Amino acid sequence: MEIIYKESFVNRLENQLDYIAQDSPSASKKFRKELINRIKKIPKNPYSYRKSIYFDDTLLHDLIFKGYTVGF
Image (cartoon, rainbow, N blue to C red; front, side):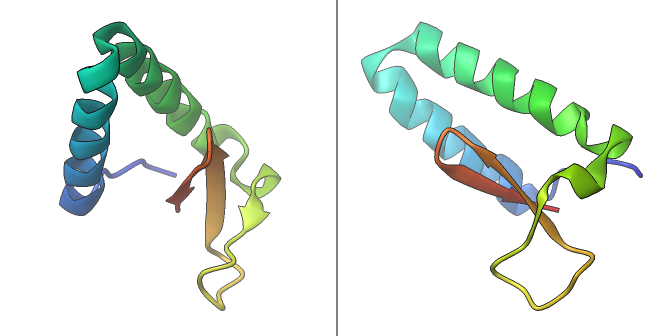
């Protein structure tokens, strides 16, 4: 499995990081680093994540990270 970051994901992530950085730039950097590290682990065990509740497709899964959902 290869991770491909869609433009919509990158844009939403940047917006969220900007919002977090308004309060704490270091928290924004930490959030980004931790999220990317979690995403990088997906290919090793993609079925350990829950099936997507947003789509009726058993091949789609959700990574839940600090209240945010990343679909893959």
